[in-house]
Length: 477
Image (cartoon, one colour):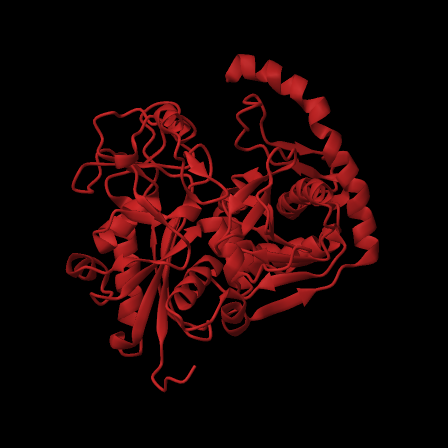
């Protein structure tokens, strides 16, 4: 690194609830950022969950404009953009690259089915659509095509089998060209510059899917490290060089580096959503107490939860707020009330349920991979909570490290850009310079023993509640 001028990278993180745009320097420090909330999903009928109008592109523009307005440096020193969007979305486009219909959310039932709009010119992911809006190119990262897309997982390119393409409902001409993470997708056009504030001509670099980019920005590199991502979807992730097929307790995703893969345990849908739901349910009374203590409502709830003993004196939460497809009758459950517990027991029990559920699924993943985890990295907004970090250390019985970046996905996108533009020789060098380890929380042996016993109870709860919820489902749906 011999240049004397500062170099900055823009990391675009288009998530499930908002679009976040962060400007990073070449040491991974966030210099400025902007955020724009996504609009509520459009759900005109069961199974259809869409992003209304052009919400993804609109919010990326708004967040970019805010980040650039707060940027204290010279925009000419911005050398690259790393683009990351929500995975498992599907965009159907006209011949000019504009939307033929609203972008399908990852929760839309159609994204798990073959394409069914034969009059469309292109079918792509949300990252492919946004790439076209930013660069005018019909190119996309190969690492955002996990699922039923007809991609060869060993070459990361479209299948050469025309029957496989036909089974998905497309011809090759309807699919974008695929590039590897770190390759240049194109340059910001004048039209995109007007929308985003990003200077025209800046290279846009391919990253991966949002979970893989978050893993990179969190510093997940060693196979014996587990990443727990605390987002709308909460899951455990590990990394390795093999594409594993036929696994029972995890699935293989593409990582943010060519030839590497991300192994993901099953997880909790509406994970941190449940935390926010309960916070809002407490209402103004909790907010008043928080203001009186000079705290945000999140810090107030976490401080109160720290006073509740591990195990919440027998209160347990089962996180089926959004039932899985294979068991649509399931509901969320609170068990164990006996008069000792109050509102903060419920709050802590939700935090414990997130850790215990993912500990169970990731432990089974570790056994199948034959790689016991020696450290846990925790990322996402929930990792800001001291009590949540300590719960993870105590549940897993190993050190739990907080991912330092406020937007790990944004930082991961910036790392891809830095590597792709040759600022760093490879991903390992970029991570060493741009990812700073966060604080480490050490496990309490007595608390770990409590959670080990409680985990056994959690694993058996649904054996008893499924019959009840099947009967209830027949009445209330």
